[in-house]
Length: 238
Image (cartoon, rainbow, N blue to C red; front, top):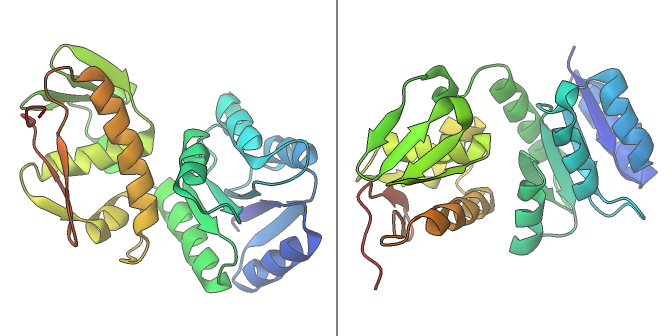
């Protein structure tokens, strides 16, 4: 049975999530103290952590970073559950290493769908991690073993999800890839309305690419109302 750990200083929310996830067949535990919650991640090795942000002196961003920096639990999937829904808040969450982001108030059925999607994804290797060969098109080279992207002669590290998004776009180079397709191939679920998850990761991915592309920085185009397109040879700066 998959174990879910909830870390939220609101005991009522913890109980609500616990009851509903247990009815769905999960083994659930929770902590209202973030420090104790981090200790439970190491002790219980849960399949998924549901993590609140605002928890007094220690916030969820700090807990997420500690999880990612601790080798034995660094790959634990994390859903950040918070009332902070602005783009910069989501960027901070993803920069802290969270896998998914759900804004309060939320529907329990949506949370269950996100938990299931993370479990499905963590139970199998990402597409890019199964492909060990270096993938190169135009100015861009993807290096799977180090989660790196090289633009011409400069290189930078990506998060696994950023790497997988770029890998999917590379596989469809020159063609539009819908947000729905990215959600299905990277996160394992299809929800055309969940564009914020894609937008936040694309924003961060573009920022990293821009920093290492001096002559060309328009490699990923937004197709409004449709999705995204990768141009492996880039578009000259205007």
